[in-house]
Length: 295
Image (spheres, rainbow, N blue to C red):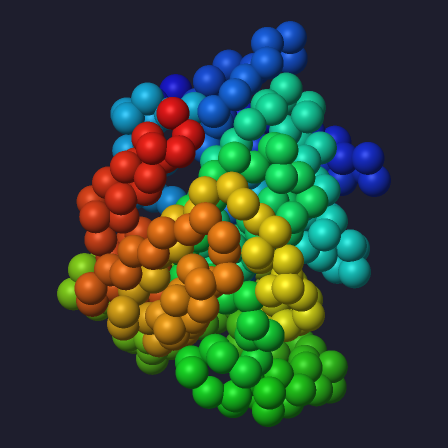
């Protein structure tokens, strides 16, 4: 797959890194592009088994780094890293690339960003595939408990008082076998996903840092889109794993019920990251959906 990467400068001066599988000449308009939005302190590694597959299936694809992430700028302006601003970034990027219609595939926090983009731009977003997301305040549903209501304030206080020590702890977790085992067990299907994937994932988490995590976690907590779901009439495919320990799969039923034109696909033995656990099933189901609604 030949890739074309570049930067786009936003209206507030940040540089967004993006990649397509088709050349951009800024004169030609493009329709029917599939856009990928990854999750909280994740990366395009989470689309490892989708990008080449969808390219081979004949789709135009676009993937990117949110502001403050990896090759995009903006990490020094945390207060500007909001779902509203990220959705505006994506809209600006699409306009810059002369892309007038997209189907969006979002995972976890990427579901929130996808829904925010769709709420603001219903003529632009023609279809959505929503994997392992929630529209409820995340503190009360993560791990199917409200433990995060208590853990987050303590974490924020520790970071504030003991920043250097906490930063060291954050940076070294990618080398901690106990942390790797916990993430592997709680976030993935251990039988389907190898340890090497977890190691790369955790190294990328370390690059992003705890401040960005807390900022975006609170964005997930504050994001209020539930009341607008019934106004989003574009076709949507809601996907979840029935063994998702992070965002329980019954929340996918809620999302499916509230979206006016949606289908539900639950992956047996799937974790919070079903597109990595069972890429063949996930890709084929999304392909069928897009062929029906975005061809």
